Length: 289
Image (cartoon, rainbow, N blue to C red; front, side):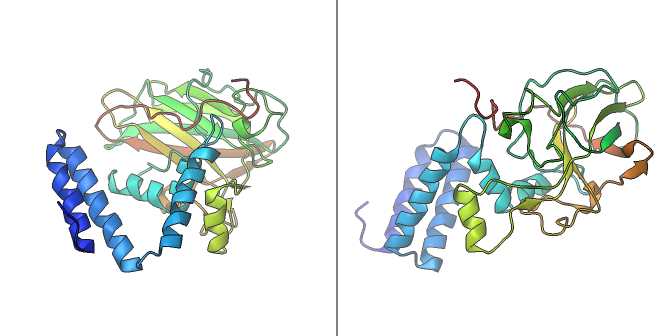
């Protein structure tokens, strides 16, 4: 098709979609083109702005390393991660953002074991969880991946002083659906701002803080795999999370004890496909390549 007008460009691109063998791929690409072209028209994007947008996309790739996933971080800062989560799960749901800090192959742990693998000063935490189906029946043999930041606000992949896989572990639910572990109480933390995500936040004069939380990934064949986060109700950034992840169903209840804190939480899984997600990162900072 010879291009004569701006509308011809969109028609020409969409006209080439008919060869796409996969129907869902064709649908996704067609919608992407329609919405991207519509954005360009509505915004009347200038040539300079277009070049700056291309530079930002390139910067996402350059900033991404085995220990840092800038694209996942930016998706959270735009609210896309939680939007995808909420439209794909029955509400209210315990499902939440996977986030950019999940690593595969964390150590398997016995019930009640500590996930503190190197000196990590902070208030002690005992967590007891329970996993049920949608009818509140306990689910045994659920793999529960756990990860969290330190009280200093750093995940072990960001911090060369923490031991490999510090504050990470995989637990298996007992016949009554419960699992438990010992750790330290996580703190709220700043997301990295030395890349495109930081530029986005700065342009909007937004802070880069996340409220304190624990991460979970629950996997059992026959049930839909979910990622989840449980948040500290007293965190000052609960309503202004820079990653837009906090939902009311995920605000926990920390109880102070003589030796630290105790937190209990129940997760519900619905029937569906059990698929472990591809980990956004594979190494910690400073790891040999």
